[in-house]
Length: 187
Image 1 (tube, rainbow, N blue to C red):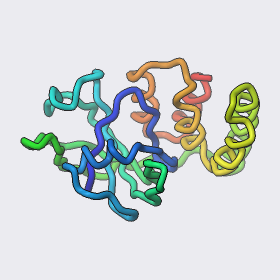
Image 2: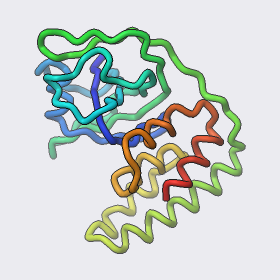
Image 3: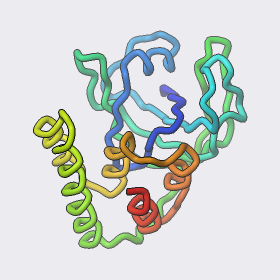
């Protein structure tokens, strides 16, 4: 399992996350990265250098997923699957991180039809935004892949004008409906 510390990144279950391959290699202690490896994303409270991180540097909830693709352009794609409670953190001498985890359950209170409508609205908003950038047509494929409110939140993450604490507060919500509501307020 590769533990990846991040700061000011939108992370949520049911989302696709993109990482620079070098970031994953550093988090894995320099070893190679391959598809199907398990990954846990943990959120740092402050923007600290990796050498300065301590066991208390992280919020108590993270996201577990799996690497679905390692591509030739220097990126890896991680499909986030579920949230985890971080019970303990150990930082090793090589700055890799070991965790004791338990799965954190989501409250499935977002009706499927309601989510489909929200996703459709968010995709339209992403298309309008993409049309104002150099990414326009290239972004279309990625926008079409958005299949949940959480995925939309993560896809829009870099463009959102919210801080690390607000991004974490959305991840922290147990109810999917509440996460969707809080995500929508960030737009």
